[in-house]
Image 1 (tube, rainbow, N blue to C red):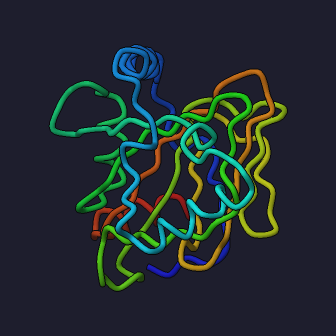
Image 2 (image 1 turned 180 degrees about the vertical axis):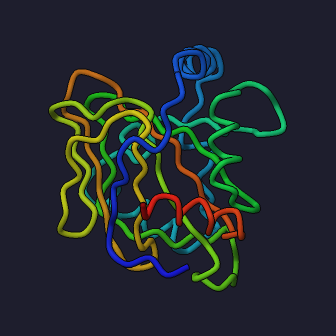
Length: 196
């Protein structure tokens, strides 16, 4: 599946996410989930990305945001499980990503190192907005600023070449579901439905 540039698909998922978001906030407070638990410093690309923050005197753990895994084998996030199933990626990594006010992620290009030597054309990464984008929440993919995103909107991009960065200067948390995995026939059919 060849994706060029960046595309925001509007109103893709219209499920009520209230229960899943409440669960996320409770789990986050109880377990103190953070990005630091997932940092693998044995990976050279990860070390390079982390050094960006350190070179600017920034703490990469406190600025990036908090995360939680959506384990589709459990029923912790039932609505999000249905969304993951709808997209149909195989070996899917489903990550809830929360960026609170004052948090940011420096410009970077994804490498998907956890998939090893897999052909990049067989992999896909996408993000689903779980909260509406508000004034002060910045997302830039390449030269394009993402604006006006609503809960349920889907962001797809050429993860192999499009650098991106985010920041939250609003007074509300921005929560997204990031899906990464191997493209299946189900994924192809799902993406075709978005083409109209």
